[in-house]
Length: 275
Ligand SMILES: Nc1ncnc2c1ncn2[C@@H]1O[C@H](COP(=O)(O)OP(=O)(O)OP(=O)(O)O)[C@@H](O)[C@H]1O
Image 1: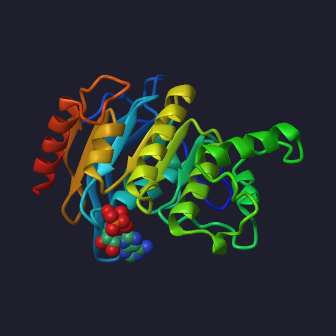
Image 2: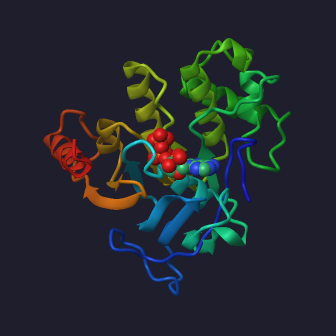
């Protein structure tokens, strides 16, 4: 297991491939970073996800969009190992999530879940990988860098109760990044941010993704955000949630937000969403 403190997740994984993915078979040593096959998740009579297939390659950035209640968060929760009861398979880096998960997965939850008694610096430091000496000046520098990256310098000594919702969300993001995960699962990490801050944080995330070569799966309601950030956008629909479409975003990187290829991808996504 891995973690970024209370906020973290972990997982692991073997992998299958799926219709909308580029993954290899479970027998392959070259497993996709994330692999979901025939995933059905029920909560009592509610079928949150039904027969979902998905494979995400190492280093790929995938966004998951869909209407409220279609199972986006549930999908991430399964991948992090937080949901043990489901049908089908879910794996990270070739290790089944039911087998304890890998150390390489970090998660940023929809709700920041910060420690109320700890200040911003402490909340971020909780995300540092196990074994890091938090009294080490290098660890301090790393935490300070992350706080600056998410635009919160000047607030390191503040407690969560003294922060806005968007600021708390950015602390949660910094904590997820502190862990330096190979696989980063993000559940609407920018939803509480104003447009300008959202754009800044999206670009920060792209920098981190590029620099680390991490695999990212991001859940969002924001079609523009999905198209701008992702290599592929998985559109979930309905209740129970099923994969309605997978849209490849063909725009070159670094991307311009006005790139026609992004507009085309957005159109494809909204068509698939039926809006
Ligand atoms: N712990 C739970 N107990 C019972 N039902 C649940 C639970 N978690 C989720 N559900 C149900 O599963 C379905 C999918 O929920 P989920 O939170 O994954 O959707 P979502 O697409 O992430 O929604 P949103 O975009 O509103 O966050 C919903 O019908 C929800 O009510």
